[in-house]
Length: 109
Image 1 (cartoon, one colour):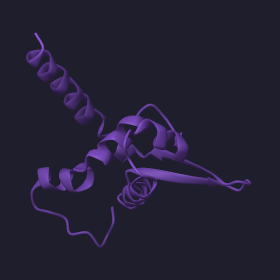
Image 2 (cartoon, one colour):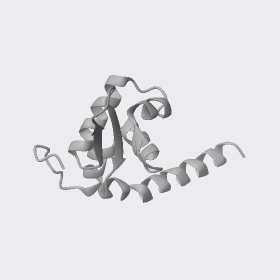
Image 3 (cartoon, helix red, strand yellow):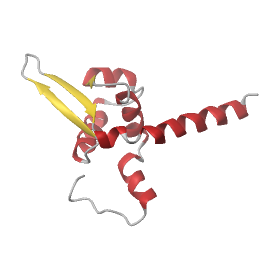
Image 4 (cartoon, helix red, strand yellow):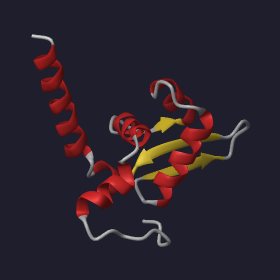
């Protein structure tokens, strides 16, 4: 966790502080299936810009949700992997998936 961030008293607020942005949730969704390169994330997270993806990956690394591994190659290869803390968000995303599915099914009988 980034030591400069204020930790809210409310646990829900803490969770939203870490993953309350739609892009972060989609990045986590894609990393739950395994390690990804930057270009893979750019392709899979529809509509995100390179600048926004870079910023979110850096913030998520600082918050301890993912790790970044740089390979000393030309051109450099960078891979992102969820940490144990990042993987612990899986039940939350599974619940969101189920809720979204149920909601869509209710709208389209």
